[in-house]
Image 1: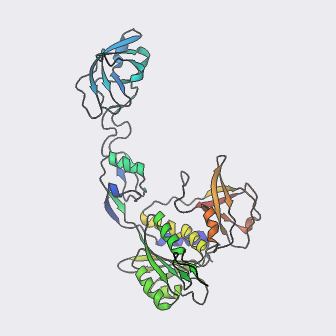
Image 2: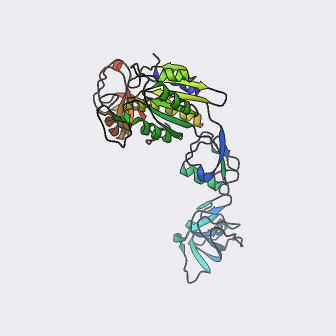
Image 3: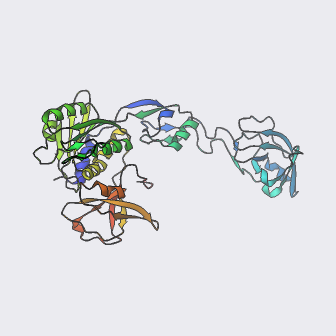
Length: 415
């Protein structure tokens, strides 16, 4: 049986980056840049003041006086162009962000100046407050024209949208978002807004998977619920194969009604692997349907909801990230210290639902009480999972284990 790492390598080998498209900046939040961007001009594009105050020249320091008097020749607000050149005896009143007048090499904050609004023609400034290059930024001080701005593969966040606006990037080349079809299977499933009846369970996998796809930047498409019949499965699978990725939940184990692998094969989907050495999620099925118009990655996720959740995070999320154009970092694990003793049951590696947090500056993990792959209630307390192995023996507080955050939980820098 494949290890998790070997199975993931097979998945990523078949997950190819999508094509690119052009979008308006207003529609670019959370999209993935397809090309590197460089700065088209200097930032700031001119010498500017960083304070409300007075623009002066340090040539005024040739005077030995402790207090220096300057004639105020004009007032400059942001957006104005100065008309006067600063000399050793003149000053310009200036506002934050305004263009510096010629000859200025110092801005003195207004709170450090003796200035009376009723007599605005002069200002007195203490000699010690006149310092070369103080409280100003020169053209190109933040970035020079042609310097790197954003790398290809960047998922655009609000602060990056602001930077793109500053540099006039009104249209952006981004990767096309992968279309991901979700198909739940099973005669026992009923809509989540219906009352329970004997033998039935509500369909929780479909809304969970649709939400997980959204957190990856994919476009989720619901295919509803397929009954455990060859005809219904076949029809819905054909619809799913029109998308970049098809996720099926249920029907991949060894039960009498586990029909999914047979129907996928009948639809021309090549099996890559079936079964991974992990708990939960052992029955995971993966394959690919190749055609002239598109290739579709197909994941047969186990029907138990925690198994489906874990398999998505370990395999589907990295695949969608690669398709979306996100530059995957070299594989490395985030680790955390176990907060309490823990014993692993069984021989397979266990991806234990857990609460991951920071305590005294250290990442720590608390395995939550969990009754197996059907116990979805336990995941409400968790924000991720920890990899625990029976080969390790009993865990004690302080033991370090690999951990993963789920969904769009906040990740630490560099992760």
